[in-house]
Image (cartoon, rainbow, N blue to C red; front, side, top):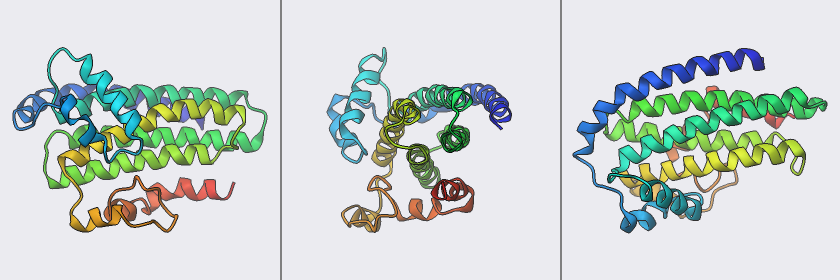
Amino acid sequence: MSSLLAQRFLRREKRALTLTGAIFFTLITVASTLVSVTSAHYFSVCASARNPTSCLAILSREIGSAILPMNQVQLLRLLLERSVCGVATAFEVARRASLSSHDPEEQTGLSYCIELFDQSRDLMEESFLALRSLNQQSNSDLHFRFTALLANYDTCLNGLQAGTAAWSTMMAQVQNLTALASTSLAIVNSLSPPDAEDADQLLEPLNGDYSSWVPKRRDRELLNHPQLTHIHDHLARI
């Protein structure tokens, strides 16, 4: 399975390069309608992030090293490019760890990490496409996809025994991916804040089914879609 997934992953990386080029000119047009993200915006953008500290660090690093000012869409595109590279690395790390492991349970958990990273790659490609036009639907799609990415990363770790070498290895990969996805979701929130009903839900305690970083009721409903939950169901039985 790892070999087939690796081939699919490589094909998707090639498609991503095409997608990146296709949206470049679109972003130039969209950029004129957005505002540049500066240090004055860092705290307001990161307020809704899962980890505000890592969000602030990422924004400071990316914007501070940029030659020209960046607006929200350009910044999202950059973070997505970082995420594509990060998930490719995580995929390969999980694949190698699975091949070297002699523990059947650990191999199963790593196999699901591989599958989740492959699925995450699809979500990133779809997010690139959603950035081609900014409207209520595309913003809602971005909310969902970045939320799903965070769920995938958590699920990968939950399928491994905490404290083991495999868990520690994947934790190092997932922490970086989670920080990028959380920061991206915070930027999307700054473009299209949750409506009044969803904003109220942010203050309500959850029943334990989802983490507090899942910002919208629609996102929580979509996370129950069969295409996203079949892997989670497998992991729950490990």
